[in-house]
Length: 620
Image (cartoon, rainbow, N blue to C red; front, side, top):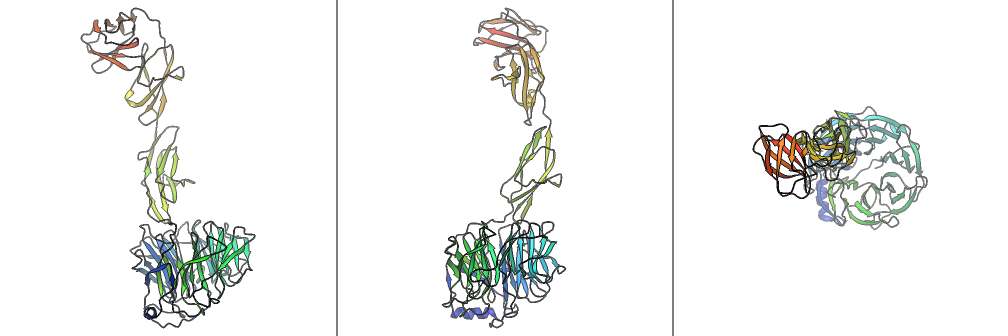
């Protein structure tokens, strides 16, 4: 609203006045339903005004709130149940003020007023729905400001129309400590007085009153760069405020001048800014004096607070033919467009889709747009904060991937309590042992994972026990998988803990241990001799050899052992294909099972499974 004092003749009891007028005049509406209205009779009227602006907020449990300004106070009202608004807290200003403004950053609200000496105030919303706490109040940099804006992508607060910087903006950083904004710059702008400003990703769209629209690059806030301006345009008036579309192609601009229409501005080319179309509200037969105030965009819809005509919704999907699709008149007693009465502000971004409206006289409105299904916005809920896998580790020289559930908007990983620069995704590749933790954000909702210790595992190297041609992995229980190699090439099918060498050469064993780490044994040399009738090895004599399937053979261990228990028969790949119980400890005769033709390995074992003798056997 322009800085012009005005008077509304309604008396000091607007709630009573509203009840009386409702008995006489049904509010005009189209595709919108009133869910509730909030108004306190005891609040003061200042210069004919009782209420001013409104903003919205949703907490991390999904509850919804209105931040609502009256002449004397800032009110925090829960509207989770839209039919039962409930005031949770309110804070008085240093004096009554026509103009109050609010914006939120994470779980903090920032407020200013353009009368009195409120300066900049910060409110902690993290304790909702129980209470709100004011954490900061300062008049050091300015005492009054008409509007404020927060570029949430960069955590920067912009004050417009401040008494110490009328011809520019004051810029603060909120990222270091949201409760103590850090001054970055107080800078003049060539467009002069800034009535309101809209900044997205460091690009500022400044409403310079009668000097029109100017666009700046605030990447370096101390040295802004002019990107473009539009100082002459159709139905030019007092450029009050504007709002950028999500695709950043269009700007809805409100000239707070009787009879001036709403402008849809093409801002795709900053060197050629132009008005694409003009549209307006027409609730009264003579619409020549209608006057708009604050515009917003959600999806393809422009939602506006329109003096005298209430909350208006327009469809801008066709930029050349913007059409009105819904409205609710919050001030139905108007018979003309003189002065400044009715709707001051609106907030259309609650996750529920309900729309907040602020009427100068009749208070807070909670409305539903019956015919419009807005695209669901982000629901600010506590994100999941669990690192997977639960007991992470990595093999020396390798990495492990840590992951947090991908339902958050922002991530920050920490290593041994120190921020990992650039580690801002849901996953992290780790190659260093230590303590890892993640801060996850879903808008202003923050959660922290429990610290997780990541271990570095040293691979367990296998060793090979050799008995002639039989190769056995020592400590095989420490490994999950095996692969035998001959002269550096994998042997097909040789994936057991034992292997009967078929050819002369250098054998190695690759294993994967219980932690998933790979290792390779030292090589062993095997010499495979030609078959003879009697096979001698260092440990076992077999006769006859070759033998017939199912016949008796004679065995004699090289060294007698009192605890022999079993004879294992393995095929060429080390698989057990026969097991015989033994009696005696010296020369013995055993009956072979029926075996296919091929090469086998005989292995003597003690009762506790230790091998004590081995020999190669051919079945013909």
